[in-house]
Structures are given as structure tokens and as C-alpha cells.
Length: 121
View 1 (cartoon, rainbow, N blue to C red):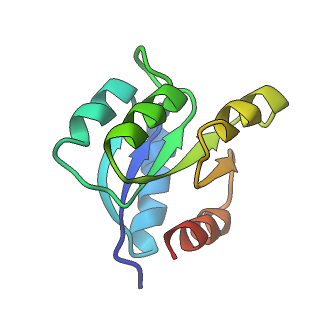
View 2 (view 1 turned 90 degrees about the vertical axis):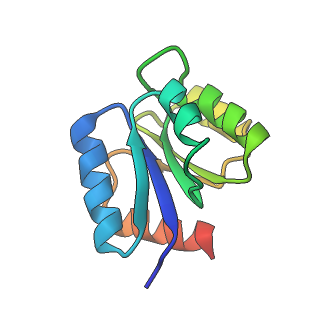
């Protein structure tokens, strides 16, 4: 059973809650949930997740891509992006950050589980 620590960064509260429930049922520890890049940067000072599930669109001034860029400069943490958009522009922007993976919303719990296993192992 996994014991990795995961942060959920998602601007939609219901989606964040659903992802958190899924992670917990799979045996992961959810270290924090946030809806803005600014909050994530502050929370990273206190928490050390093994992986961040990062929505591309967030509340606040920083989007998920900008937030991931800042976090990757300061911390050694894996980032899997979540996006509702799979257009070429969005996917190219994600690809520029060399992400550990991405999931297109809506996704099934099995897709999330498979991505996490691949990235964390």
C-alpha cells in the first residue's frame, strides 16, 4: 500500500475533495489542499509532499504553470498537471515544464492511480 504524501492544488472545491477522497482510499496521505498558487508556495514551507497534483488554472495571480515553475526551482518535488483543456497550446505549455505527467479532466480514479504508480515508482 502506498504511503506517499501528495498535495492537491485545484481551484474547484468539489473536484479537490473528490481527488482527496480517492487518494486517501488508495492509501496516499494528502498533506494539503489548495486553490491558489500563492497559498501553495506558502504551504510548501511547512509541508514536503512527494508529488503535487497541480491544476493548470488556479485562483489568485499565479496559474498552475507559474506555480509549478517556482516550486520546481526551490523544491525537489514531482508535479502532475491536471487540465480540462487538451488543446495543443495548453499541452505545449505543460510540456515546456518537463512535467512528470498530466491528466485531462474529467479522469477516472483508475487513470489517477495508474499515473501515480508510474510517477512515484
